[in-house]
Amino acid sequence: MTTLGNIIGSSLEEEFAEFDLTEIQQVLGRLQNTDAIDLAHAELLQQQAIRGADILSEYLGKLVKMVGYLEAKVNSVKNKAALNYEHPTARTTSDMKKWYAESAPEVEVEQIKLAKARASKMVLEKKYDILIKCHHSFKEIAQGMRRTIVGHNVPSSMSSPDW
Image 1 (cartoon, rainbow, N blue to C red):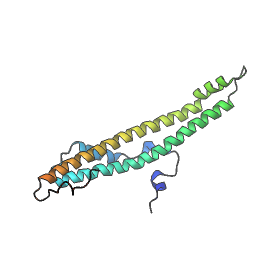
Image 2: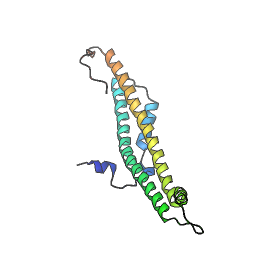
Image 3: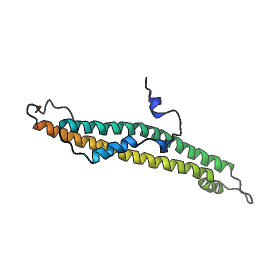
Image 4: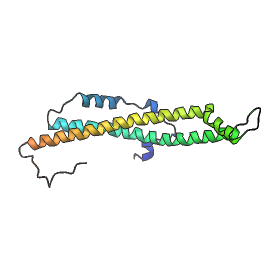
């Protein structure tokens, strides 16, 4: 049994830099340099694009979970830094605590992690969009090829919906 927990993982901080994008890059390379030569080939290219998008959707789920966790962690670390700050020579004001919390080294570490996770998510979302667009492009090519095959012309009322 495969559960959603298996897909998104149980760890709150994923090693997203270690996500294996080899298959994704191979699929994108093949799709970029390949023209569909017949109906079966166009359908194969559609399947490859969907396979790549499927892999990316799992990675994106992990990143969405991690970005949410890191946003909460940044806020928590900021709050803790503000609460614990005491000016060494003067009376500590709330503005001083706020400014310290914005620039505390421990907050900066967490903000960098969050920035990397957001950037990784953006890259994967762009690759996902490209794969979905490729899938739809090859789907249109396949539909055009089907129209040219004798005996394969399905009336428009019976054709499958565009998903």
